[in-house]
Image (spheres, rainbow, N blue to C red):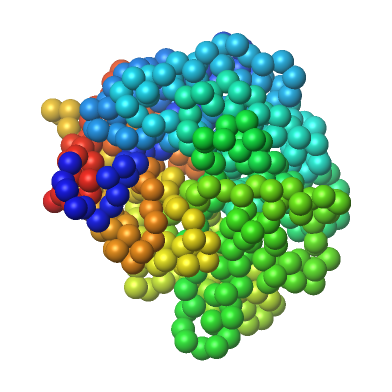
Length: 469
């Protein structure tokens, strides 16, 4: 490893996946269905029965990650694989699988980083109201405790809830938001569910610190700075509103145990304050994350909301049309877009690091960042994904600049280690360093084939980020 690199010598280079998108075996060995297993998938996209078949081929996959030189592998546990009904009886086969996966990582010196919840509420708990049910706080806390007890002897790094802000803001788009029938105030309901998640993850962090004093735990929201469209003062206010709603609501609650004042005032004006019970704020303050994990794909841009005729609301996981009276989402003319329409902003990555660190002064680890694209397998079994290499190179350059700015950065785990099922676009939208030889519905050979980015990232890791050519 190169001496005197910008990044710390124990920097956690790796990549990420999630259980429901990579494992397959969605109802095997005692696993209960999750909300993802019972949802209607977008027309023309694969279901989650097989995915990348990581459940059966994890040893082969981890060996390839080791060949790349991974220092960490961030993956999630499928709640319904270990506790099929979400509460009650534990599934020994589920515990055995994740225990073996953890051991396989450790065998190669790869640090397992475990996400407790990644968009896959057990279907049995969905039927009981999911996060709308106040009991969800204890469901999650007890599940987390079970995971700490079973795997805490080998797992140092934990993440609570993946992209809680996306669950709240675009839940219906990713198949996770359950609204009660005849809901009279959807906004109040959504932010009550969000409140339950905030309290639940704070409880989990406190439990982790109590029973695993040497472990580290933090959140994993999707964070990206929101720019004002212009220097018009009303656009500045709009961008502040958008940042508060998208970013600071969550991080303020995670780190400080309090609600962001701008969001609280807005919810109050909409008669949509969450149902808060005595002791909730004490629980929030007890969470105390050790670090901040965050997913970064792009920034956003906002302008003043100018009239009732404008449409707002969620457009995708990365885009928001705005919120009435707060801001209007607009496209940034200075940014390129991916094949799937997502804006690409490496410099915004640095800006996001700087803003997070100046507000919270906690170490940070990137838990997702990557480029979804149509990859082509050549006749000689090569994948020339120079576009992905370029994307990652530009983002890693900004990580190094952020580190030079004084930001404390622990690691980089882009999305994704291996091709998997995309939430919206199925198998055709590929992110991985490792190609999985299957199509949307034709499983083909399922062979693992390293892409050009595989060999490039291996060189990046070996040089601790110095060799980006």
